Amino acid sequence: MIRTNKDLERYIFVGILCAQGIILGLIEQSFPPIFAFAPGAKLGFTNVITLLALVILPFKDCILLTFLRLTTTALISGGVSTFIYAATGAFLSLFLMKLALLAYPRLVSLIGVSILGGVSHNFGQLLVASLIAQSKYVMLYLPLLTFSGIVAGILVGFGVKYLLPYTQAITHVQKGLLKNRKGI
Image 1 (tube, rainbow, N blue to C red):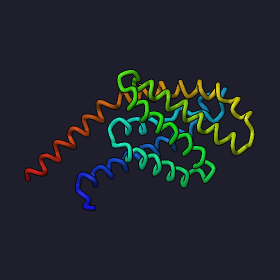
Image 2 (image 1 turned 180 degrees about the vertical axis):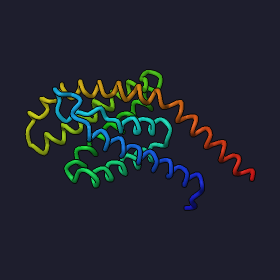
Image 3 (image 1 turned 90 degrees about the vertical axis):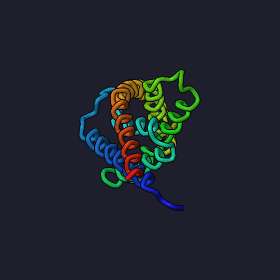
Image 4 (image 1 turned 90 degrees about the horizontal axis):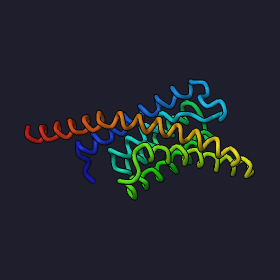
């Protein structure tokens, strides 16, 4: 398989997004809990990067981005248990958001997709917690985390709607630069 400059640029872009996601995640970990009624619930700043990637990158790159971000963050600040919880929520939400974007592109807005991601991320983490604790009562936390997932999803969705035009401008410029390089 021959690698091209286009592949290299795509991997660099994935790496940049990964670094941004890691930094946002570490910054978010330093904040006190936002939702006092739901300890452990966060706004999910890294999901801005994930949803942007879903819109502008091939899905296999989104999977790579999510895996690299989760692995690096777990190595920096967590451990195996952190990785298990985060990976379950992240990949469940990633696949469901992609499914929503593919199946209902005209019916579901980016904010709706983001809400789906926030709620499914929390559900995935609760499912793992329930399995590890061997208790179905952990799922009683679901209504609170559903509410926090909706709030976080709305905020992340608006963030992506704000950033998307800038991201599309960057990718448009990159495509123009690639064309210019071919002519040199």
